[in-house]
Length: 331
Image (cartoon, rainbow, N blue to C red; front, side):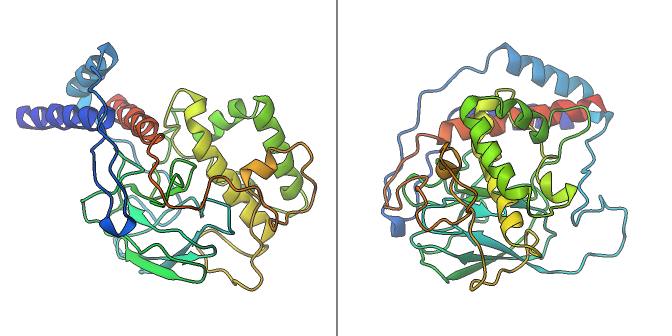
């Protein structure tokens, strides 16, 4: 027990340092990026000390059970799940800087195939402590590729696995995704709860109205309409959830515009209908037509380094981790 507590404190302390001072991981030379300078260290504060104390006191009281229904039976089934190939769209159309679906569940051994629908994008594995920075922990990365290209990787863990587009400011504009996203325990706020508050902002109200106008005629099931709601609220500040909520909206719209398609299934590139950009959805003049031929891009498609959003993402995930550990302590 004493050894476990020592390891726990050391692990949490290391994580806190990594989150507030993101690792200055240089991107691959093939992308010709310069790593951003590491920011000054930020003291943890009383909230951190309180969380560490709570975790040390209650660590053995149980853990949060993964409640998802998508390929994870929490060890109750002794039969190993069959290995499958799941599909992720890289940028549904030019200017739509998103991965679709934004997140999915997968088992160890499953193949993840990324399919490019637009030009000048890449896929690089990242981590919780730096969503917009490459990780050296069992890394994978594709070249920067164009429409119709594919890239495949194999899932080697049931833990959350992050990836992002390393081109320019694509990641900080929301172009990142998660394999095996954390699910919210019943006693903690989830994304669905936060989304209700988020859409009260006048701009976000317009986005939701225009998105709802597309979805209401699609005969979507309740499960499709609420896709992504059960994930952990990664921050108490709803502003930090904007990128996540926008990604969820884009995936829901993709479901609405492509009847019969389910997240993770392959797409027919000849008949696929891409969702509009968030910028278009935010326009008060946006009509009922879902076409994206004149889509207002969410960021430039030109290469270049922009890490302005990396610190926010690191702190956001840091907040989630301590919420999850605290929830584990309660049980």
